[in-house]
Length: 204
Image (cartoon, rainbow, N blue to C red; front, side, top):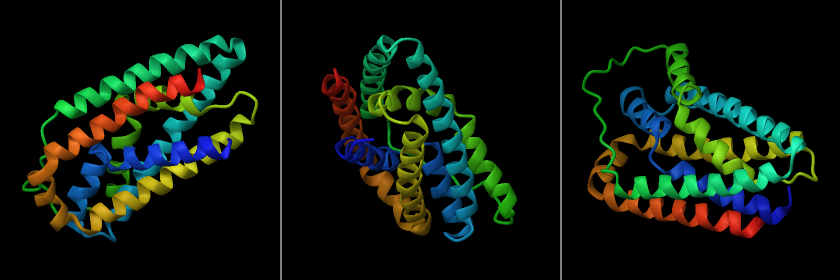
């Protein structure tokens, strides 16, 4: 993966990590319930789930591209439009609400890990999202395995840092999301629309 492509993916990963989603919300909830240290189990489970989805998408896309490089162009445009559509949905969505009233505080690390993993690995929206995003960064002239390693490490590091920050500051983040969540969603939605429209043009 070329350096400029990696930098674009790194910036995109930061934007994705900052966008409210099921695993970020789970880290927020578990951080408020169990504390930042114990929520590391939740975060670790989610990251492994993300890596599995990234592998599934990248190697599936790689096999398709081997059949015809035209499919990569098609995937880039379809994926770009899908990302823009997600951005519009996020722009229009209400602020994230967190309800921790019904949760207990005695969950084991194994239980938290399983919740994080299943939240990521069984979310069809994550699979669709990665299927739309990753073709924008694949270079057919470079090793797919190396690109997978770069993408997986970059994304998991940014997601780990973000979710750890959310979990450790859960008590402060929850009221902040309620106060400025709408504008935050609009800012993130605008970023997704820009990414969805710009990336296919860049690589066309």
